[in-house]
Length: 304
Image (cartoon, rainbow, N blue to C red; front, top):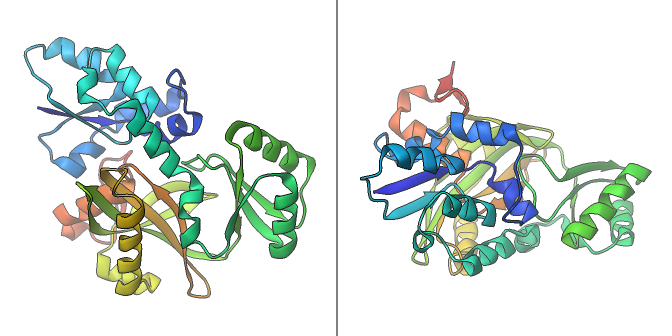
């Protein structure tokens, strides 16, 4: 059987990079409480559990043979957490593969898709970018879930400079983006299996200060209508994923975008893992009557 591991702490583990990293208790509890997200994606009959839940599951299912493991996202901490509980290393990705995924997840990978972004190697780069753009967002190269983001207006203060020094020391660079007036957030969900790239669908979501809040269950046609996203842009991004990602990564992934109040579409980030947008898309496929409802992983279904 296949084991489906829900490890939403993946972004923090990927950012840290250490196999011995200990995620916050709240993130680990969320993994246990909401592992049914994997059932939404793969079906009600699949066996889903948190990364640190294998040992207790196996104790109750000793006669069940696990011959495949699918994780929400692969990182060194998740791999070694499973191995310590008895999962065979042969069922898990190699260290080299995980390292390749981490390199590709660096925010600089998507710079060719971004018009108003650049990478800083020191504080002078940040000051120059700020001088040209006035209002900017700084991001750690590896970060997610609203972490590793700093909003800057006009000039750097002492706290900003401390944050920049910290990220430069830990991750070697800082990503810079011009701040835009965001009208709405959405994503294109992809899969890349055996170097074949497929557009799985679109998702529409809302954030607060960069932190994911919920998805709004909308059809792909409605999302395109609301955002102005057209087929040529979808094809262009799909081609980029095929040429840049598919050789090094196999699985589901998403590219987040936003539409500005001026009607421009801007690429925000790439996630080489399963996404809440994919789960929301699957939810609407199963329950078309729920179109227009809000969905969060915490409530297990749409909110009216």
